[in-house]
Image 1: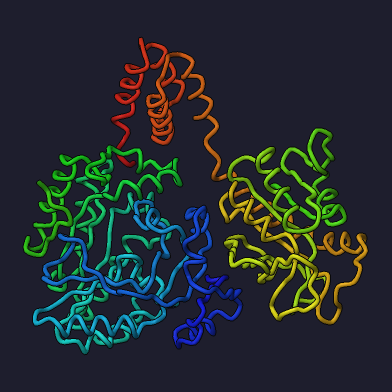
Image 2: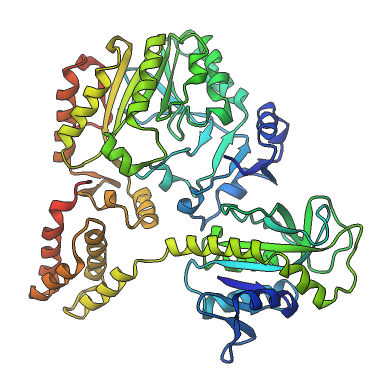
Length: 331
Length: 267
């Protein structure tokens, strides 16, 4: 799975690095001074690197938690995200990471303690509840067998009295969660597009069916789960496909375990889009009915409004509208 | 694939394996066939840089494969072993390259130091050559870094330090690894092919541009629409007919847009 590991000077001493190096004894280990020497150079092909990404073990410096974009929350007042990992096991054609990062290598920040210190400091400084989102720049669970992220962070979050954590995923690697008692303030949020769309755009992602099964298993164990219907993709038979998806989910999922559903149409900064389109000039998604609006590329406003309306209507058959959040303001 | 090799003795196995033929018109010693091109650079950083630049500017297209092949010293590997350079440092500068290792290869990956003069002190886990750094710096200006690789065959080690290596010995050592080299070359060439522009779209764009006068902006729009048409499954000859039936470029673009519109939803 991992054939090449780059290791940043100083990171090799950290326990997490030693653990990973011992897990991949056959990997070529290449030392580097700073992860940016490997991750940042220009003229790398994200597309080609996706064929066989390497693992970079490094320490993240500076600020480790950041406020999330407005309207991206799921009901919380104070919202932050943090990224122990940049890049993803999967290869989703709509993903902004392809345009954001120069490299597709997995950049794994092994200084977990620094992340925890900062998260603790923030939660201690707030009287209200606060949210920490972990799956913005990666899939929270997909590389668990390599990173051990949830095994390490969930016990930490369990001790914070006012902190919620969201794990966002398309993975079915839920073993680490099945082995522990559910956290009161954790949401395991699964992202979905209809299977027909997933097959075309989400390379390497487990089937919708198996993800629903994993989500249901967690819900049955007492975990709060979330649905992230983001991005919504303009496709043939949009209403029918999304309705089928919701039906399949709610016929199995105990709805009392559902924390929230968020909806958001496909959109990304124009600069990222341009970069991605250049890498995949043959991708039909990018020939969709898209518009540039204030440096963002997305669907036309009328489609976005209609798509969200269709989904809300369909979802309302199953759940209270108070659990539905829209990631973009629909004017 | 574009090969840059310091000496003829190191290049001979490649020339033989791919049946490359010396070209009369090219500067320096260049050998080629339909798919591959090899330039003998001569010894050292400057010569490697010049040869790579020359090949890039005169022969190679954008995002083709590049390989620097030759003999090297090594602090840990045994004489005769081959390795891929995963990190290339320079003895005189801070600049470090990390050729991305995305090919499946049985060759071990090692760090490599490009020095200005022959090395007699070997550090463990380190290879030593005199060209790779300059080669990589120049070649990665013409192609994505994933397509630029360096393979070295160990000719000298701490227990068998560098002496005068007979050219024939270098040829023999490299010949033994041509199967691994070829495996790598095939993978890189395949990846390079994946990145090449769609020839059908390029050709039909050229043809259509002769039908009407397209401004620079409109010719870009045309190219994009043709690309969209192809990926959405609209017949490009049909598009060409639409253009022929339009009175000017502006209306041609409008007609193509209308023709494509119903197909813009994902399947």
